[in-house]
Length: 384
Ligand SMILES: [Zn+2]
Ligand SMILES: [Zn+2]
Image (cartoon, rainbow, N blue to C red):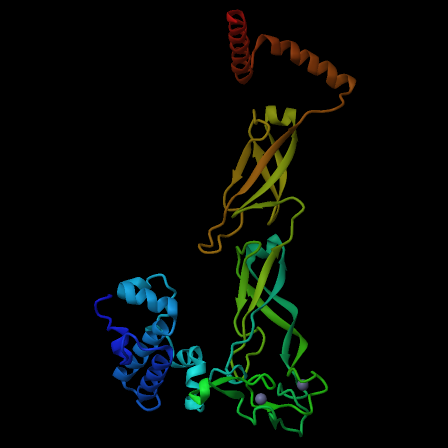
């Protein structure tokens, strides 16, 4: 890579001890010679033009020049060099604005006032229910954006008037100053007209010369099924208008999913927590649970534990990509009665008596673990 590069002094045709002014003059000469206007569709000229820009970037910068003098091309690694091979002519011109100055005046498009620019993107919110996430939906949304002023058609001046040439720069959009004893000219964008070359003497009364007013817009937006909270649907060309005929920006609709009184979303699954009585858990039961398609009966097997989860496949939300629906996850909450009436208490006491004879498997494990734990601890204490 480094070996194919020519020596920068050779590129500009200057000696190693040449001063800053010589380097500048040499580069200006090269740039004029290989200028794209004079060499249309000439690839070789383009390469030479870029090569001399690179050489100039190095030799005009005392620090980069010193590194280059000592270590050659390798010395410039990490020195913050531009990649001229990828750069557009206009970018190169605007980089060395002070040198080219009026020389290429007609060609330069760097001034801000004339550049076609894409409009800004804007954001808005779109609120969905879980049912809308399930099916996907087309929603009408209303939002505000800056838009071309109707009164002046975005021109910024009162109809019937026209912009006048800028008195500060004489309509050039740029102002020039002579520098270094007239050797070259410093050219900058005119601060008065910001490079437009014209000024508005009768600004539009509706938009105060901005060319833009805030407008309400109503739009129908398609939201795909399975969309998640915080994701955005992009609607192209619905942002703010571009400048000087540039395209509009885009509109991003950020999805907010409203919370459901019973159903909680967990990716493509829906979770519902269902309280049941302890006798239902022990004996098994059929209970009604809410789902997105209305009430649903589910069977709770006997011996269901508190916190256990029953899965109803295909009753969740569709996956945004595959469309496959997740599950409805029913989490069982076993409730212990806080109050018992006389009859219930009697029955439960009788039940408890029978329970003493039969130890529940889970409890058995727990009790044995507990016994061992305490036994071990006592041993431990005795040792100390
Ligand atoms: Zn206007
Ligand atoms: Zn001006």
